[in-house]
Amino acid sequence: MTDLLWIELVCFLVVMAATFAALKWVEREVRRLTKMQDDVNDSMMKARKADGKKLRQLTGEEHGPLFLLDDEINGLAEGTHYLDANGDVQIKPIK
Image (cartoon, helix red, strand yellow):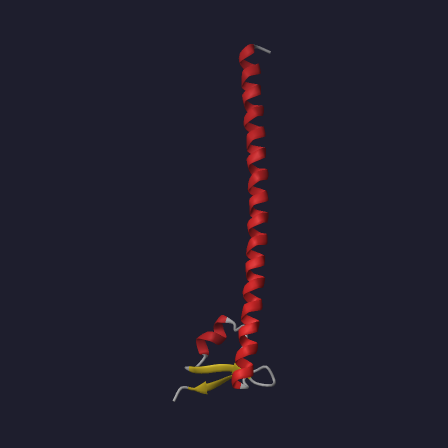
C-alpha cells in the first residue's frame, strides 16, 4: 500500500471510532433522560393521587386522577367531571 492509502485508512478508522463513541454517548444520554422523565412522571402521578385523595376527603366525591381518551374529552359537557361508584364519568352541570 502506498503512504496515501495508509493515511486514508487511518483517517477512516479514526472517524469510525469517533462516530461509534458519539453514538454510545447519545445512547447513554437517551437512557439517562428517559429515566429522568420516568421519575418525574412517577412523582407527578403520586402528587395527582394525593390531590385526588385530599379532594375526595373534602368533598366526598371522586376527583381522580382521571384518564380520559381524546374522543371522550371532545364529547364532555361543561361542568364538574367526577367518577361515580362504578367508575363512570359523571357531570355536575355548572349553575
